[in-house]
Length: 316
Ligand code: NDP
Image 1: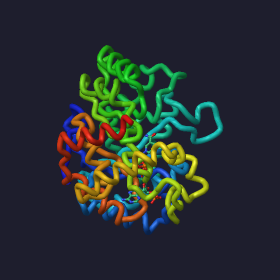
Image 2: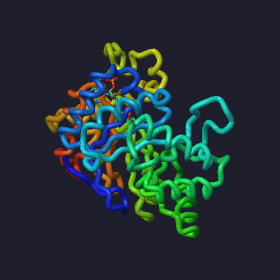
Image 3: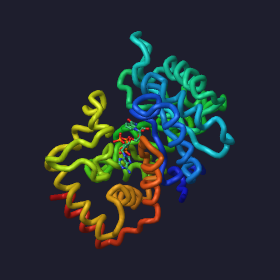
Image 4: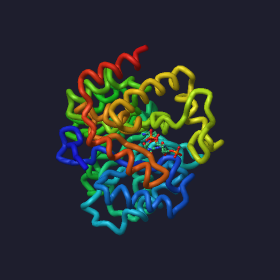
């Protein structure tokens, strides 16, 4: 495994990290989840991702249980706050109250004394950013969070966070977690440049477009049994990647992967990791074999010529 610095921080994370949305504590049963996390850990993955809202805390319980047997210093654990955890007016968002209560609830479910990274899962227009950053900073002083992060914040929102942190002498955010893959490149224009300017690393989620960039879904083909798209409750999340136009691109990209003698998943992950500002590609996996295939991406070096061929396909 290779490790990269997370933004300008001193924290080193594996180039491939493992998340738990829609899988652990959800569609993947407990033993399969623990086996997959164990496999990743043994293979050198040191960075694991979850959130309070993933199946209302169930993902945190499984991830915490799987990791608890390992030395605490050997892995980096991230969780998140923002989404609704109840029906009440204070059961969501980034208020000081919700942040404090949710961090403590997450620590309890995870069975940990601290999390390495605590993400603000989305921007909250109803709470002053200063209130949020101050609350996170206080939890950092208490040793319950080591690093502050955000997820899917725009370039302007990242700039705002940096400005306020500097003015108020609060810890800066060191990481943003946006979606990024061959079929969704929106962060290239503004988010990555702002990350580079301020030393904020990107940890990109859905680098395989939820499995579409493994080539297992084909235009006009059958949906593979047991896949995310075959699950009636999860299909709505992946549908946006299953259009004819996108599947045509996937077909062409599969040709490039074949020329390299690698899997499309490995091409897609190596392509994401070509950007220095991206510290880690955050994958999901329902089985150890998927992790095994995906982590081989770290050994793939793409030539400029291949990157141009990929770019031509993506801009068609
Ligand atoms: P991916 O794009 O990596 O998709 C993962 C899914 O693709 C797997 O669960 C599996 O689904 C399938 N897959 C993965 N590898 C292979 C393979 N080699 N062969 C065949 N199928 C494969 O990422 P996710 O969309 O799952 O997101 C990753 C993580 O990012 C999440 O777990 C979560 O932690 C985080 N995330 C964060 C968000 C945010 O708002 N901050 C939003 C979404 C995710 P299956 O086997 O079921 O088909």
